Image (cartoon, helix red, strand yellow):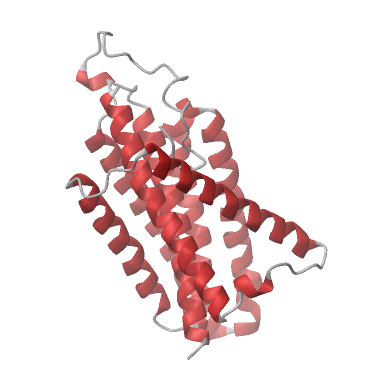
Length: 260
């Protein structure tokens, strides 16, 4: 089983006490798709709640004193990003901690996304509702297509998406490090020109297709009788993909607005 999501890999459900088909296990002890879906919804609610906090705080500060808004909100945004990253790394290495740390990750990412979204909304009114609609619309369409059997990823397809995801992650990392030293690389990819828009379309497509691979991975894990706590891990992994997809859609819409 392959997936481009860095939190899911071929060993995730193999090396952490996965029950075999010949093992005696009650339904209450085994991972289920419904259980993973419920926990994913719970994490989304947590992220939405914390996002609303930084969102409302940002706009209230902008109306009172625009010059002080960034400095006042920055600790929440960057704090959320750092806490979310740390929680994600710990979960990736300590899968059994997912029931405790996945909600922490969701709350932290909500703080980060709320501030980032408010910043985009201030510059491009109406962009956030479009990005949210695009993210959940994509999720619903791909889930329906997967459940109906219209999309069933082959091994070569999974390998291709995983490779593309890794390439994008490497590109972002190299660009970020170069930027820290004052060397802007691949500026055309991140600009609002046709090349930049085309690049964003490709990245959004890759992020969306990772959802399909995640659905397939979780379905197979549930079929193998993975332990119950991995429902939280599967929900966390889906959150990682959804956050990435939302940010990429937001960036694409911003580029399109710049060309108007």
